[in-house]
Image (tube, rainbow, N blue to C red):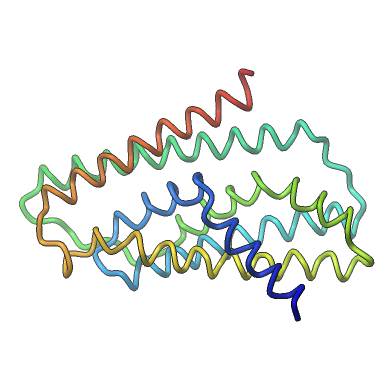
Length: 203
């Protein structure tokens, strides 16, 4: 039971890493309702867990060795996704400011799921290597990854709910303040994404 709780906590803590929070923050800033933002967080977590679990199957069950340098390229891809998210959100902000009547946001969560899938690539290598060093059986290893993933889903559920509060129109009436928050969030996403790309491809 203790091991189960520790694994859940590890997944929850993993969800609060900087790149994850920046990505989800940019996603939820596009929502007007907290419930839609929370669903984004959940779908991100499901996508993230799916990728890690698939990498786990390849490396643990099928004994496929993924070269360490490959994960640096995965990290760089995540950086590019962060840059793209930031630019996308700035373009959405500019477009909405030009319109007197803004169209309702889509309630689909495919983007959140896709971003989660890609983000799962970044940390999957280190996690699977850790599991390989400690597991007693293949089943135990895959179960650890699955429980870890559940923890990360719950963590992103919490994070997306908290981050969505400033962007909820029911709670914050100042459109200008929302625009400033979106601008800051988007620029942070772009700069951090650039740093990730630089660190993994140019150093």
